[in-house]
Amino acid sequence: AGTYRGGRTSIDAYLEQTVIANPHLKLTYLLPKAAGPVVFERAAEELPREPLEIKPHPHGVELGLLIRMMHESKGWSVKKTLIESFSRVSASVADQVCDDAGLSPHAKASSLNGDQIEAVHKALGQVKVLAPPASCVVPVGVDLIKAGLHRRFPDAEFFSAVTRPPSVYRGNPFVIECGIAYGGKMATDEQADVMRFANRVPLQYQPKACAMSEAVYQTNWKAYELQQPRGSLPIGPLAVFLHLASVWVPFTSEAK
Image 1: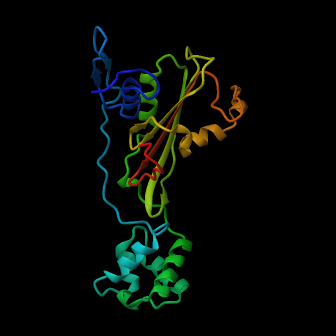
Image 2: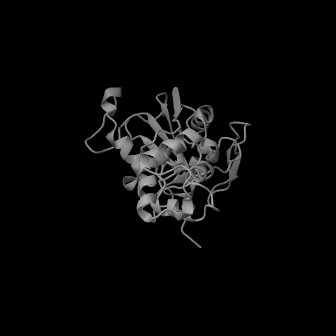
Image 3: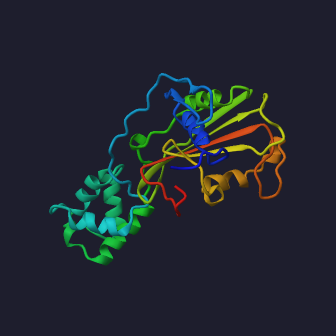
């Protein structure tokens, strides 16, 4: 049992945002006091692709995980362990890591002591490695973000979106996406509508404790001819879509 109410953290807002990040979804729901159902028609026929399992990326991997990898290396050499345990680590990259750590590539990985593994850990963080494959996370994509925003804000006149290249945090790949809807018949005297998502799930609570919200606050919206009181969201006909696609989302509180 619960209380049905409107507002930014309401069930209505949650479902309305859900259809933006999931444009392949047709959603029909009945409000408790409404005469008929609310229907969001499907905005795209393309389904999200299935995520694929990948190995950890060497940049940002924690020391404890590296120690476990080395001790459970099945008798492999340090070089082979690095190649087999991480994504984007080729034979040449493994050789460079061993050289920077002052170790022989042919040394037995399970025989390394704590200082040696720590040297490998330091070298892994400094060596140049390709960005991790984004196949393990499922971003919405530029075209589908625009489709979702257009469905939610049909009266806007301008839509734009971008999907950043994958980055890595503590060995976990993540992708950041952003989209905006602007102008048209959207309200000009209200604060911008900022919608935050983690893996397509709307985030409704504690917006000021969120790095995505902070990025919006710190943007100089006056350069885009929008009003922006100090330390506040811009005021104008604007909606901002922010999405973090990651296998590990670092929530710092119970806000999720």
